[in-house]
Amino acid sequence: MTKKLYTFLLLGALSMSAIAQTADFQKAVSRFKGATRVTAVATRVNHKAAVAKDDKVTGTMTITSPNKMNISVAGGKEQLDMNGNDFSMVMHGNTHKTNSRKDNQFVAFQAVLTAIITGDYAGIDQVSGVSMTEADGIVSITMDPTVGQAQKKRMMFTSFVITLDVKKGEIRTLRMNGRGKNYTEYAFSGFVFK
Image 1 (cartoon, rainbow, N blue to C red):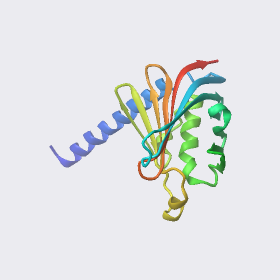
Image 2: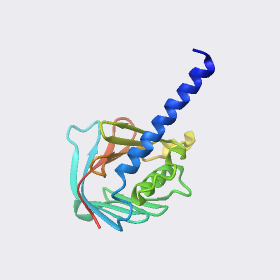
Image 3: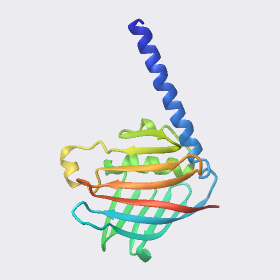
Image 4: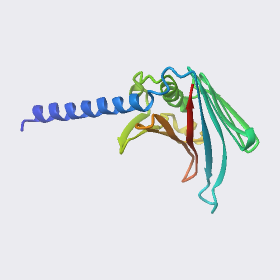
């Protein structure tokens, strides 16, 4: 096989894989498209590698099209909120606020969440730091922020991973990875689309 033919076949296979992933993503978020309000039960697990038992609490997730999401657990004492480009997080009594226009860590996160909420792929694979895989009916989207070394030291999270269930058309999990093996993960169930 010539080098040109091999390169052509390899690029063709990669393109077909990307097309399949895009189709799986579209199928997984199709229920969100056209919905004005989506609610679900949210279960948050806070995992600290140095602590034997995970901190687990439940609450709700509410999504309002086109770009708002709120996850509220522990009776509203702890929250994760996206309102367009603005993000806020209340955890352990501390409030953290940022904006995807000024914080590179949240650019991909905001783009992916908006694509899910609107049910529109909109080329999220072109967003820097985003990769997507599909296996056994689960689409996994990893957002690994491309930031400088100085900013990495100040980051609360090193990466984000959202999994989507293609068959059910629902978000399965949202994981925010911290340093080391620490993470915060939300698992979702009982979706209601309106």
